[in-house]
Length: 198
Image 1 (cartoon, rainbow, N blue to C red):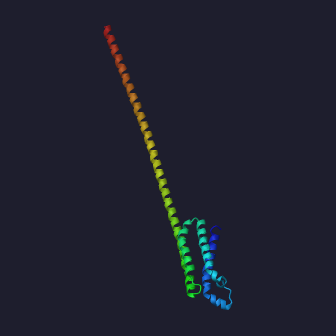
Image 2: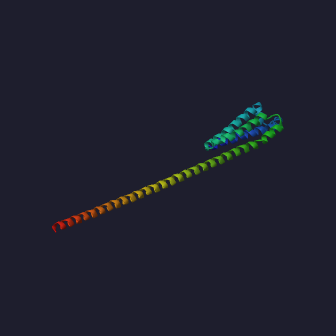
Image 3: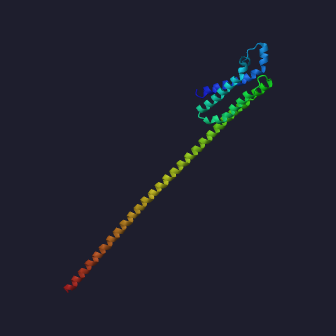
């Protein structure tokens, strides 16, 4: 009911607004025929009544938009409010032509509200699409960065293994050369002892 009730009240108020304007076309005929119309009942209070209907109408549509998460509807809806204000200001209650013209102009008010709703919906969809694309790009970049970081780590590990292997080979080579030197020294000592004996 957060959206439905305000929208229902707005529609009801708008109906009273344009129907009252229409009723004033036949106000004189209603008076002669003894018909108790809203135009005769309101009399000089018609314009304040129309203002009240306009306020309820615009307020109801705005409240329904806010409840649905389309608060941006309030900006284009101001054009509809200005249109209803224009109707009330320029209305000549004693002229059938004026009443008929402004009664028919309510189709323009309906078009304004419809265009405002469609525009807000399109803007909302475009905004959601842009946010989704940005999130996907950010996630892709993060994933790519993580993969590269992992590869770098593997490279470092491989480098460490290679370095360890080289160090081990170097140490092994050094030990081999030391053993050979020891054998040579031992052979030289034996040769000296043999010459002394002779």
